[in-house]
Length: 257
Length: 162
Image 1: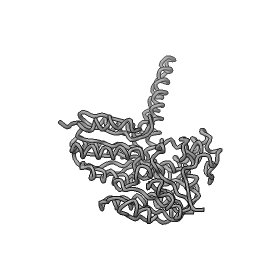
Image 2: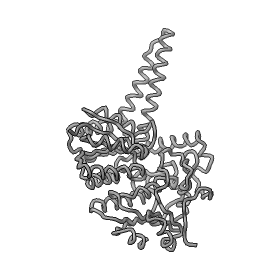
Image 3: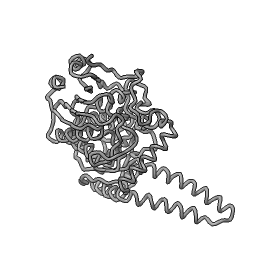
Image 4: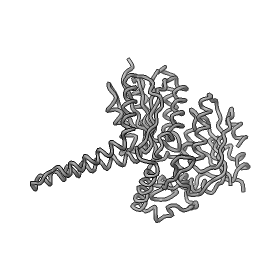
């Protein structure tokens, strides 16, 4: 008996990935039996293929790399195609893709690859959700988690000194409200996608984004990468320069002389 | 300079060398991108993974035109070719701008000439459309002024067209 949903987190990052966060959010909204499995290396393939054999629905949750799926996901899809054909699996497939740019629509080429994958594999493509500003969403939710910890500490210290705890709680509530506002499109469309996954119906393709004007988003992104580059030292190592190969680790290159 | 990235195997390198200044065989032996962005923030235009693709974006940055020869996989590139492109995001910088009406990263090596994709294998009409969209999106992303896509029945024909 086929039942349940397998959510495949396609991020190569071990932890703190936007895709992992979105996969856990989606799992929280999907009813019935569900499993979130991470696809990082070929060693993860057997467990995921085993899980989909008895599943009814699969949700790929993936970052966008160079306009498509990350390269490490593609060999898995080839294996999954063979597995589905061999075992005549009739899964319903959904996708949640996120990219660092503000426009969720930049996930369109990835969605088409997913649709073609389903057609080749004999599976039912049920649509997906493309999210713009995934990195910003991830940074915001990590900062909110840190802020929650600091707020709790602040409340305890204030209580110990006999002061009112409301000020730090109010401050945290404002920050949480801001994040919910920024992510309102993502939340609404995640709820919509989960509704279709629960019913096993076609969700179509939808695109959304962090609710920030793009020029502000670019400003925030530039500030973020500048700060990180200062902290990691890249800004002092030819940050924006036309760097030439050092010759130490060039690929297997050949060419006419 | 013209670069060819291909997944046709090392035996086709000799033939392709006559057609380009730079030929890179994507043989699938390289580690995939880890998504850490350190090729932007720690060691610009160099990957943290210390294999032969470590500075591939610096090599590709020297080229004006790029041809990608790839097996069709669901209307996208083969895993080996996609791996190489994923490891090449140091072609751009971490800063952002508008290009083609959308947000993209600024270009470390400036605007380039032509991005040509030669895909081989069997295709559905939807896969051909997806490959055209993929080539267009990649061209805008990497700063190429023109792009084109050709479809071939097999690797032999694709190698001949490169």
